[in-house]
Structure formats: structure tokens, C-alpha cells
Image (cartoon, rainbow, N blue to C red):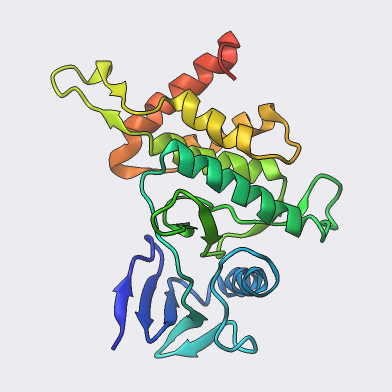
Length: 241
């Protein structure tokens, strides 16, 4: 009996007897990218001290079933948190550092400063936390992996961290809504100060703004707009970044 799990807006994910079945949306069109991502996730699960989903049969990273493209993984234990608090952001940043450190062992043929793979969806339900703890212990869902600079992965993650900032919306005066618990700056700064590889902050800012501007965050677009304004003001006035 399969139990439906959360699979984001793209895929259908089911769990049964310790195995996970992923039915890839538009799988055949994206087959090469999915195959690469699945193989990388299996590598992380088997060779790096980071929890990820190991392939049930590594000779079949993807296979056709009932007219769709599917992958079977072993289940990766861990809890999903949303939204992340500051302790969880700090731990996630350290996990992302370890992830990049291991993958820098395979330099990109496209030139210096690039690493073999970025996750590019290192956020929300794709990071696993130790039950009862803020410790980030794993990462799943590698279907968007790509070659690029670490600043791109940081910017993508920060775009979600800012959009997921807890905000108290004043319904009588929405323009005076205030952050609750932690500010944009605290969430931004917590990720970057706990990420220990070398990076250029101006490039992180550019990637963050690019993702915030280009992506549709649905009901959270009003927070996205506030985050964009905050970033522009902080950069222009050189106040907090």
C-alpha cells in the first residue's frame, strides 16, 4: 500500500515499506537532468556523511512505468521544518558547506570558481532535520542540480529563507506589517555567517534578487516584495549587508 508524501509542485511521491517511489512530472522531457540528479543523490547517500535517498537499484536511476518516468529510493529518515527558525538556518548553512566541500573535489570543466554540482533547491521540505533538534542532517530531491558558482546556491536558498520570514500581517494597515521572531537581516545574516566557504557577497545579492524577481511564490508574494525592497535599500544605503 502506497502512502502519498509531499512532493512539491512537480512530482508525485509515495512511500511503502521503507521505499520511496517518485513519479516525475514531465519526466521524459527532463530525463537527462533527472537522471543526473538522481545519480548525484545516490552518490551523496552512499559516499558522504549526509543523509539522502539511496537508489533501490543503482543500475536503474530512472525507469518507465505505466507510461511515466519513475525512480525508487530507500527512505531517508528525518523531519521537515517550515518555516526554518534561526537555529535551523544556521545548521542548514553548515550542511550546505559540507555538501559543497565534498563536491568541489570534482572541479567543473567550465572554468575555475565553479563546482561540479549545485543543489539549487536547498530549502523547505528538501532539507531533513534530526527529530527533536535543530540539526540539519540530510538533503533530498536533486532534480534541479546544475553546474555553477556557490553564490547561485546561496542566493537560491536565501530567496526561500526571506520569503519564508514569519510576518504578522496587519489587516487594517498591510503596509505596516512587521516581522515576528526574526528580521530579514537576521535570517540573511545567519545563513551567510554559518556558511564557511569563500563567496562574494555582491554575487549572492544578485542571485537572490534574480530568484526573488523571477519566481512566483503564490500567496507569499507580498513577503517576496518586501524582501526585494529590503535588499535594494540595504545595498543602496550600505546599511546592513
